[in-house]
Length: 107
Length: 117
Image 1: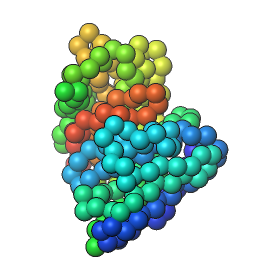
Image 2: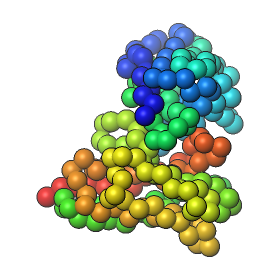
Image 3: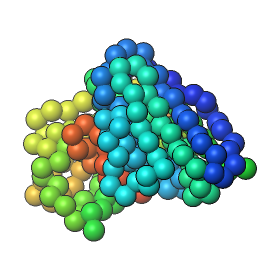
């Protein structure tokens, strides 16, 4: 099973700051890594597919990067609406797995 | 509008059974793989089952294997999850999720399953 480890678990950030979330895979998964955003009391939403391909409607301040075992989600100039928990997900092999999540709070 | 609507959640005793359903609308259901993903209260996301568009390929997470059965009816645009021998740790919101090229691009709002005596 591919284990995904996100860091940090929690981040408290002021608006306009940059946020960087890392997702590390326990083995090489190529670019089969996707990012989701889940706001409180909402379903998750896809942000990026295959590490760096943004999904429809995702603001340009979000950026996904990485390959192999290390991946990064960057939010440039954080806005209040970005308060959420962010999850990475691998589809390299079954069972598909998620990272534990990174909660981003707005100061 | 593309939409997935889950139903069937509720309170069930340990050892009991429950059947979750998901109604799809606004897109061609029959050409898409589908999944169930769950989220225990205050916890992260856990993928639990995948079914291909034709039902030819099915996968389960080890945590539910042997206790749940995923199925679909392409004529009715519906997805089901039969859950048996339920345990306390199965308490979660269960999301119906569309799979596209191995990522999850459309999620339902979820249905809450509570396993408790």
